[in-house]
Image 1 (tube, rainbow, N blue to C red):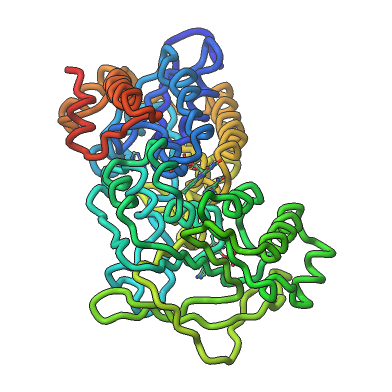
Image 2: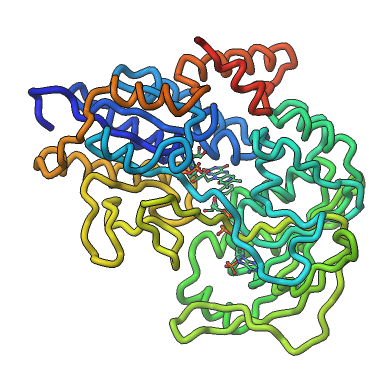
Length: 464
Ligand SMILES: Cc1cc2nc3c(=O)[nH]c(=O)nc-3n(C[C@H](O)[C@H](O)[C@H](O)COP(=O)(O)OP(=O)(O)OC[C@H]3O[C@@H](n4cnc5c(N)ncnc54)[C@H](O)[C@@H]3O)c2cc1C
Ligand SMILES: NC(=O)c1ccc[n+]([C@@H]2O[C@H](COP(=O)([O-])OP(=O)(O)OC[C@H]3O[C@@H](n4cnc5c(N)ncnc54)[C@H](OP(=O)(O)O)[C@@H]3O)[C@@H](O)[C@H]2O)c1
């Protein structure tokens, strides 16, 4: 990077883990660019704050490193409560910055496309997760926890998280940073059984082994698995022997171990894992009363992948008062930014965004994290991913291929934001929110007590 002249200025859009890792890489040296971090919420760190389950304390502590390596660094500013695409546009950013890095994650859920999916009581796990984590957009969700059984669709780690949160002992929840409104509702919950349905078999479950193991070791919770359900079909048997991953083998061992266990004498709640079952209809007149599921078998597709094929058998009805659809997150396009409508990502090569119609790189526009590669991968995956994107950006800066923006001075973007965003939250504002939440947490022996409404967050983050 050039040592002479003013530092180039980079906008990162989205202050989740991917944006944070990208910022940390850019800010690590001494002669790097200035970084402005735009975030639609008043708080940074994306799904680390609003996704990772409250009982995963150790993981949540990554926020300290982000504060230190990003917001405490010179040449970094935080612009919270600023939504790109609404408050300011992509072309505004292009006019003010040498480079723009999109790190906006995947903001919505994939749908199942079955009748009854939108009945009250059938919720995307994305909403439920935001609700218990104090995401201000989900403050009013009020899931109905008055029924005895909940059904979770999906076999990924998010499904494991929500099943755990529905069954976790109140005493344990009380020691976490779960949002107060959720703590209160979960304390009163009548849910005694959570049935988790995988459309494919036990060898194809997307849980990581640590998360699966955790489900089998919750205080007061029986993990039930019918031993017949962990017998492999011939296709899966052959797949596991020839191409099965370490995780798939370990998961199967764990599932068999759990299936062989006797029920715990003191368990008051249970999680049941069932495989090779797909929902075909959500049932209920005014709200969810149950879900109709059909059995599947595993088949190899022409491309070699293993698919769930429906069996010609009568569907089964599972009664429930709450249905959580945990079948993956999905990105939302931004106005004037190229979007791959098939893969739901910004079309990119190693993080350099290109226009899919011409195949040409869009100079100075980059992607990182879930918006770059799709909604998979743990926190650490985004660190490597950010290294790749930042390496491209730094190479482009060094090669001098990025045009100088029309309005390069920081006062120019500050002027625009002062006009268009009435209540921006700066890094100082975030520190006030953080301090207040931690102080309240200290009094209750919890990591923090979250401010969970936009109003409270904006008021605590107002440092003018
Ligand atoms: C429920 C859940 C639990 C998880 N738990 C774990 C775990 O325990 N351990 C683990 O290792 N991984 C976990 N993960 C995975 C991890 O959270 C992700 O890999 C990571 O968060 C992806 O980072 P990201 O920055 O791409 O997206 P995000 O974390 O979603 O960050 C995107 C950010 O962009 C902001 N944004 C979006 N649109 C705009 C806009 N237009 N303008 C400005 N800002 C915008 C969003 O508000 C958000 O802050 C979990 C994921 C989920 C969904
Ligand atoms: N503790 C942690 O480390 C942690 C916690 C939470 C999330 N995460 C990570 O965050 C990422 C996202 O997690 P995720 O659980 O949302 O996604 P995921 O891992 O992709 O799992 C999605 C699940 O939904 C199923 N599914 C998809 N479409 C379906 C349909 N139409 N009908 C029925 N089932 C369907 C998938 O089954 P198929 O396999 O058959 O497609 C899969 O079991 C993952 O990489 C995960 O590891 C990590």
